[in-house]
Length: 300
Image (cartoon, one colour):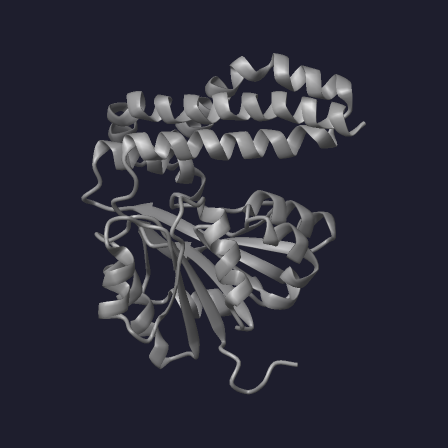
């Protein structure tokens, strides 16, 4: 049973080459410690000196280092396993939480909800590459939107009750891929809330090449994990329809931006880079579908 010393919230910050943003991220979190008992865990895989910076500037924060290239969901998974708080909040070092981030999480994560996600805004100083990344990954969480129950949310600004995650340790151990965890939770009847009250700001993130590679790898994982659950006819339909994936993603992004009537010029200007990112995901998803077919065939 949790003791009285159990932190109110464990915050898992996944960090990859985040030397330019991690100080602002951690300072925002540290300022909220005076109101709550927080456990902050930075799980870092960087080659830009981020780990050393955290050790020097934030000696009280727990730092877990990864020497080899690792995907962000695996960093989250390691941090979650090492955490002990009643609530587990996850983000990345390129996100700057609002000053009321923790209080909004705690206020929102009340019955009947087991998990909560929030809004993601983009920095005023963002480059076109940053805008393309933002639209590609976070357009669904751009303000304004109404609070609602959802089946999925971005792991970059999310929080879970610890007891709600306990049954899914087997899934999480292989990497905290939020779409898999959220799907398992909702299938079991647990409820997820998406609210505009929990706000983070995406700041200078990954470059074109590194994010393109990340999109491809994440697309592979998504496609590989998705198809084996479908009957053979449905798997073949998904594979044959794969050329439509970029158009579907691009249409959804443009529709969201038009509906919310914000950042339309940024979307147009960044669209060539955005299309590259979408293509990388789409090719990865297709490769995942193909490998999923062979894996299913081999295990049959």
